[in-house]
Length: 93
Image (cartoon, rainbow, N blue to C red):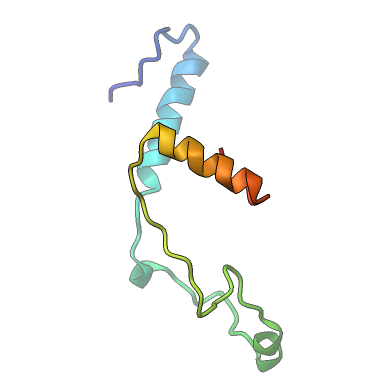
């Protein structure tokens, strides 16, 4: 098993052990398909629990914004930022 090299060699046996143990932990945490997960020890949710449940995450709206990427010149970007600042609607720098 090759150990990661970060420019310095481990000096003590404990350091070597920590490197090896960390590598083994990462290897054992590989993806497991949902079909192999055992849910038998988790009790089913009651109707009362399901009524109290709330959706977590972004709210659903009919106005979902679209993420786009464009390339513009630095001069044009500076002009747009100045214009937004004048309208008191600053963009992220």
